[in-house]
Length: 102
Image 1 (spheres, one colour):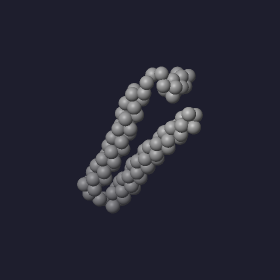
Image 2 (tube, rainbow, N blue to C red):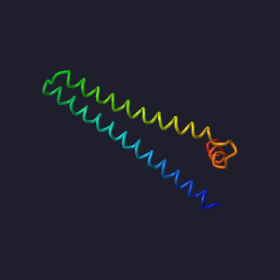
Image 3 (cartoon, rainbow, N blue to C red):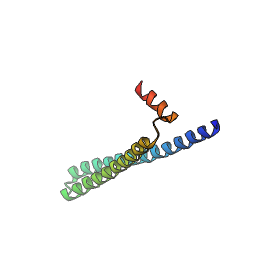
Image 4 (cartoon, one colour):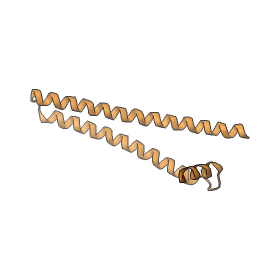
C-alpha cells in the first residue's frame, strides 16, 4: 500500500518534471526569438533595412509568445480541473492544502 502511494507520487513528479521542461523549452525559444529580433533591429538601424523585415520579426515574436501563453493556459486549466476533481478528503489534497495555507 505504501509502495503504491510512493509510486503514484513518483509518477506525478515525473509528469510535472516533463511539463516543466516543456515550458522551460518554450520560454527559451521565445527568448531566442527575442534576441534574434533585437539583433536584427540593430542591424536594420545600421544598414537601413526596410521596415517590412522588422514588422515580420515582431510578428514572429508575437506568434511565438502567443503559442507559449496558450500552452501555459492549457496546462493551468487542465491542472486546476484535475485538482477540483480530487475528493476534498483525499490525503494528498489535504496535505497540499495545509502546506499552501502556511
